[in-house]
Length: 392
Ligand SMILES: Nc1nc2c(ncn2[C@@H]2O[C@H](COP(=O)(O)OP(=O)(O)O)[C@@H](O)[C@H]2O)c(=O)[nH]1
Ligand SMILES: [Mg+2]
Image (cartoon, rainbow, N blue to C red; front, top):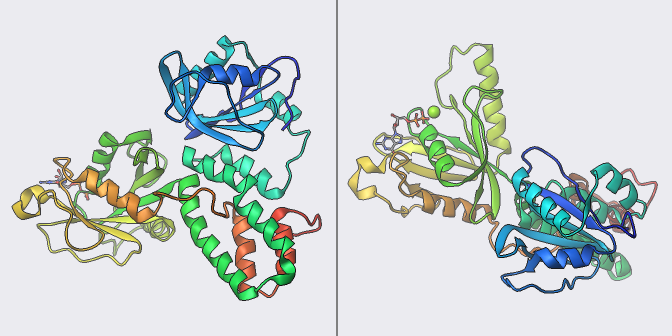
């Protein structure tokens, strides 16, 4: 990316969406590196240091104003004098970062002006362009790291290396590798796009109480009020030290007997069933004092609620796998449940450097390698955007 103005150093907010989980702030110009050096501390280092990062590389650290840490961020070096700070999306944090950069001499400009100047120099391949776009919508900082890694290594590198060695390709191994990448991609997608977790179970088992409990305990980004535009109530929050951004959905009415349901209720039931099919995880809440029937949804974590009413269940992770005992009313067992959710999602210790397909286009192409006899060479070329006539 080319610095828009060679003389003045400019700062601009690339993503100005109301409550985005991640925002991107670009700093470009002759003094950009020096200005960032004044406000960025890499890793856990709190001492001021010069910014040593080359184009294409990223740094993980914090933006600090004197001794005060404003936010944990990823800084990408987009060109010799162009950097993008990926920070958390709270507009107040974004404003503080912009103001801080201005106080060090950067001039604030609008995103359109910045983009017009920046995109004069095109990206090196389609995966890079897709990664840069996706970064602006990533739900977590860890997601930005995965996307950045796909540009210089990861998926781009794998596709290029495979193309180079195409004459010696073992097709069975190649198909198997594509399958592995698609598996990895599911986890990457959870980190990049966030997850949807449906809270299901019989009436009165404590679903709404559990949602309130999570809303009170976790770092809630957005919280819907009951009876708004949708037929369910949800909260969006970070879990596990911001490892994953999760939307928890309380599906009121899911298990209510609706034999005589009118159209509106039937539509609501259908929406809920669709949601159950498309979500990443179901929390099936059951009342431990009631005879509950198991749910067939997969993947599912069983939540045995109201353990305050039964002494021996209290506060324990039960022997049954993927099953937790809690008291939503007393806020007991929620930490263990959240830990279990994170483990179930597989997002911990994800290796960002591994190839991951992060757009539907990329996933379709990898699936085509596995399921069709199309030439691998053509598909890999399409993946990298090397064939201008490609239908992808
Ligand atoms: N003793 C006890 N009562 C609970 C607990 N969780 C929910 N309840 C009560 O169970 C009833 C139904 O809870 P609610 O969250 O509305 O259930 P939902 O229909 O599944 O959403 C309410 O009276 C709650 O106060 C719990 O952990 N312990
Ligand atoms: Mg309810």
